[in-house]
Amino acid sequence: MKSIIAINLSAICVPISGIFVEKATQIEAEAGEFVVVRAFCTFFVAGIILVRSKKHVWKDILTGKFKFVVIIACCSTFGFCSMMVGFSLMQLSTAIIILNTAPFWTTLLAHFFNGEPILK
Image 1 (cartoon, rainbow, N blue to C red):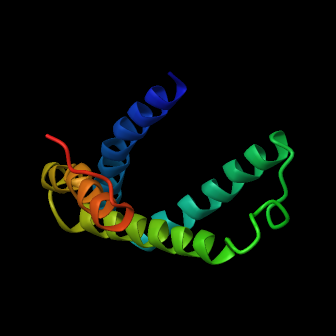
Image 2 (image 1 turned 60 degrees about the horizontal axis):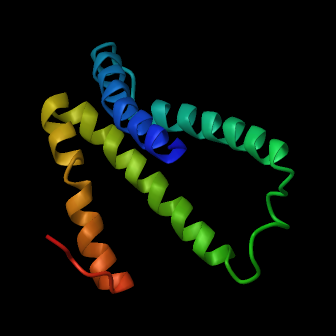
């Protein structure tokens, strides 16, 4: 149940963040400013989560998985930067429609990289 709530909150927050980006670009804010603020917020929230779960940032990464963690971080950062630039360059409704093609891309990537079947 927690996972369903988390995914729905994410689905709600993406268009809300797009609305704020759209408004902020009208007052000439740059997409880079959003990236810096998001990085700070992510660092802050991750720190709270790590402290509460009694995890250590470096010691608790599985041996040999650091490269994998860096790839995930780079992909998510690039994805967020691309999303912010897209929100600032096109209409919000068009950007959200394109963003909602993520299940399609996820299905294809899961099929080719993980060998998962594509079901109807």
